[in-house]
Image (cartoon, helix red, strand yellow):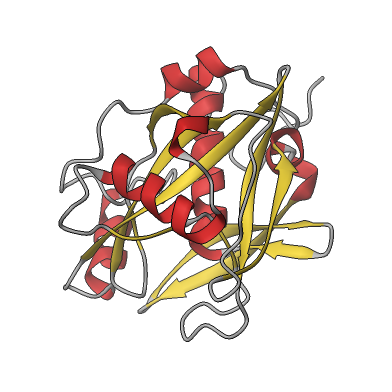
Length: 225
């Protein structure tokens, strides 16, 4: 029997490009659907967490880059520079504020990825959006998922990023690699999951986005998310 995950899906799940595209949203979240990163929680808990977050929301976007090497999928992540003022040294997806010149979150995510790691937009194919994530720093982050050509070349901006690296999707989605802990925002506590890969701890909003992607794909595959 397959090992069950903390959220009810199989322990190790494998997906292809078509399933990923089918599971994602074609458009960013509407204003009232920005707490879907809290899975399996009652509406009142979601509202308590929402009320504890900053009321001024700053629009931002990140690129969730899925690298496809003949069906072996991985996520391209960055480690933020340890000299940055905010979130120094954390594992993150490339991204930042949505600027006035950006047509949409996808455009913003591609621009930020090029600025941070030199990833060319021509090497990325749009796949879809994850639900927006409201985070404690006041950003409303739209995660835009894209398929990255495996022969991509990077030019890392050292002032923003220490390094970029890949993590196999199968590793990120394996229930054995998820570590549950309690998170508290305001007076409300709820469970979140951290993932450690090659000595790097993936946590916070980045881990939340990974878990959201996992949940949406498992649900699409017919599992309980």
